[in-house]
Each structure stands twice: as C-alpha cells, then as structure tokens.
Amino acid sequence: MKNKTNVGASSTRLQKGKNKPFDFILFIDVLILLGMGITMVLSASSPLALSTTSSSYTYVYKQAIAAVLGIIVMLIISKIDYKILSKFYKPIWIISVLGVAAVLIPGIGVSVNGAKRWIIFPVFGRIQPSEITKLGLIIFFAAYLTIHRSELKELWKGFFKPLVFFVLPIIAILLGVQSHLSASVVIILTISVMMIMAGCKFSHFIIFGGAGAVAGGGLLYVLAKYFQIRADRLQRLGAFIDPWKDPLDSGWQIIQGLYAIGTGGLFGVGLGNSRQKYLYISEPHNDYIFAVLAEELGFVGCVIVILLFAIFIWRGIITAMRAPDMFGSLLACGITALIGFQAIMNIAVVTSSIPVTGIALPFFSYGGTSLIILLASVRSTTQHIKAK
Image 1 (cartoon, rainbow, N blue to C red):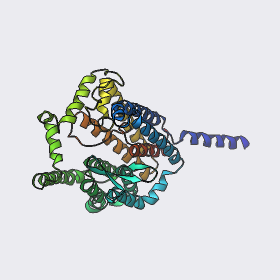
Image 2: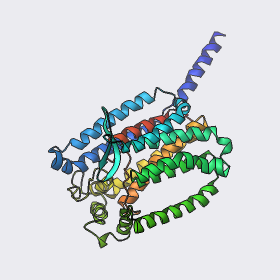
Image 3: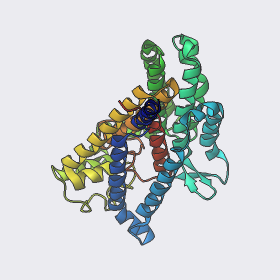
Image 4: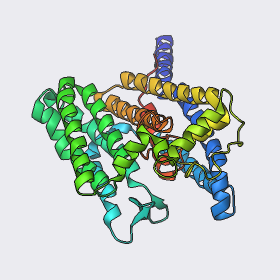
C-alpha cells in the first residue's frame, strides 16, 4: 500500500512537471529579439544621440533600463494567475479610455513633432498611453467575449455592440486627438481577430468591415480636401505612390530608407557601419530602425529577424490552442496578433509596401513604454501553456 502511494505521488509530481507553464522556445526567441533590438538601438541612435546630447549612449541607456524594468515586470506577472485579470476587465477598459484621453489635460499631455501622444507620469517620466491601452483592450475583450459567448453569432450583440461601445470611443480619441492612425489600425485588426476566433461571424467583418473602410476612406479624403483637416495623410499617400516627386520633403524618409535597404545587399555593410543613420533617416532608432538593420546586416539579417517574428507568432498560436480556458486562449491570441501586426506593418512601411505611418517595430524601436508592455504581455501568454 505504501509503494502504491509513493508511485501515485511520484506520478502526480511528474504530471505537474510536464504541465509546467513555460515555453522555452518562445522565451529564447524573445530574448534574441530583445538582444538584437538593444544592439540596433545603440547602432542606429548613436549619431543622433551624439549630436543632441554629446553622448552616443543616451538612447540605448534608456532602452536598457526599460528592458530591465520589463524583465522585472515579467517576473512579477509570472507569480500572478492570469485569470485574475478577467475579474477587473471593466475597470481596465475605463483606464484604457482615460489613458488615451489624458493627453488633453494641460500640464500632463505632451506634444512631440506635432503629435500629442505622450503624457508626463510621476517617477516614470514621459510615457505613451496608447501602448497601455492596446494591452488593456486585449484583456477587456478576452473577458467580454468569454462572458458573452452565447451572443457572438448575432449581428448587433456579437458584432456592432462591442465595436461601437468599446472600440469606437478609443479609436475616436486616437484619431481625433492624437492623430494616431497606426495605433487605430492595429487595434482594429487585433480586436477583429479576437472576435473571429471567439466565434463571431466572419461574414459580418467582410461585409460591414469593408463598407466601413470605404466610408472612412471617403470621409478622410473629403475632410482633407475641402476642410484642410489632416491633409498630410494625402501627402503621405502621394509620397508612397511616387516618393521621387517630392524627394526633399514628403518623399525624403521613404527614399532614404530604400537607399539603406539597397546598400545593405546580401550581408550588409557591417554592424555599426550604416551611412544613412547619419541624420539622413529621421530618428533612425524609431520607426525606421529596420532600414538601418537592413543596411548593416543585409538581406540575411532581415530574414533572420522575420523568422524570429514568425517563430513568435507560431508559439503564440500554440499557446492559444493549449490554453485551458477561453479567456486564456483569447488573451494569447490578442497579444500574438498585436505584436504580429505591428511587426508586419512596420516592415511593410520601411520597404515602401504600404504608405508611411508611425508604427514601431516590436522589441527593436526605441520606446520604454512599448518595451515594458511588450515584455509584460509576452510573459502573460506563457503562464497557461500546457506541454504536449
């Protein structure tokens, strides 16, 4: 009897070990992306940092601090059951709305390069609330769609209601106040994927999503043409179609980015040897850091980075499939979609495959808020993964 008890206890411990909530492949993949990202921030930002702050390490120093803080947050989150988040999904949505609206508060909202997308937060300094809002919306919709799963096939309750009441207010603030088109697009795509995976009808998104996109594009054109509102959107579209028509202004960034990519060739000019980062590409450590990477590491380096993001998406899908409940599955699905869409859109912008819009490359582009949120969200997706 004693032997049977010992065998049973050993079997239980073995089973617990097999189900240990940790994805080693995803963890290593993220570490490689993070290491490459910090290295590229150092290389891409050094000329600009030296010319503005008299130190080549200003930006990479801040990015490294954000990475350390992000890892600390990862460790903290690893001790918390992700299911607790579902209990606070309503307050999380309210905080998400208030966060993006906080840029309107005098003395708190900060404008950079004509865009009011940042707020001053005590201790942490300048942060971008839209990055927090993205994760907040994912948590909210993972819980909301789980609770209302019986209504998801309906046109009003399953499609229009969640989009109109919970997504549209945030999109209105992002577009109307912050002029943040890229964040709006990423949020819409991410939430759409989550809703479809939860059980909403795909036909609803095809019919009404397509009609909404056409109507929105028409409205933007009319506002820009006849009311001079956000006319720079049309300038960006024109620069995308023919950047050499205005090479010294609207087409400058596109052309310089393409020069960097073309110069890189197969193996690149060598790490740290980029020429376009010397004030040709505007803020090369931000949205166009992939162009510097292409110049220094070449086609091979680009393929490696793309494969690393592909591995991340693959492991994210596996995580969503193995999650023990619908909330966990949708949480992993949303975070994977968010990072995947941002990576695809950033690379598409830099390679002039889509019109220029300000969107960061996850784990690479300079930005403390984004990096901390990314690392925190990645850890939350691995808590509920089950071994085969």
